[in-house]
Length: 115
Figure 1 (tube, one colour):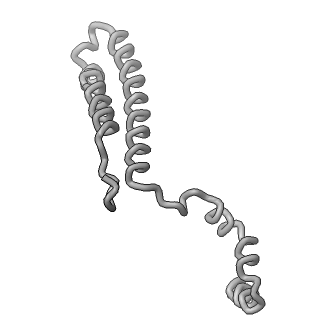
Figure 2 (spheres, rainbow, N blue to C red; figure 1 turned 180 degrees about the vertical axis):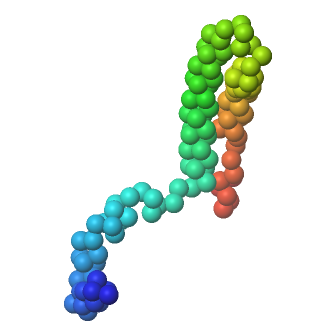
Figure 3 (tube, rainbow, N blue to C red; figure 1 turned 180 degrees about the horizontal axis):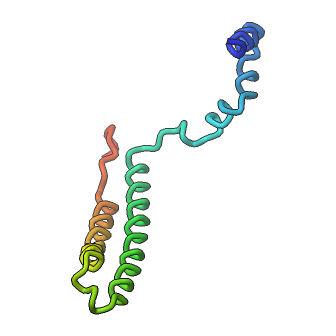
């Protein structure tokens, strides 16, 4: 309630903008890019880039799981761990990268008569 009273008094004095700029939480919002909405095309490109980064990380991890599987002793070939490792190794993540590349290269509509 005290903050509201101070804000109201500052507003009456015409200094409300100066007052809210002094509040760290509001200042952080005003200075962030999150307040600006990216276009759909920009968000699509960002999503494709993020997806590619994530899938490349999974491919690196998949390689580590392959190394783990290759290092398992023969007596564990039929174990639950081996089965789980095989499931990870059998994922076709390269195909997912191909799909992401296809999505990146789609001719997106710009809208509003810009197409």
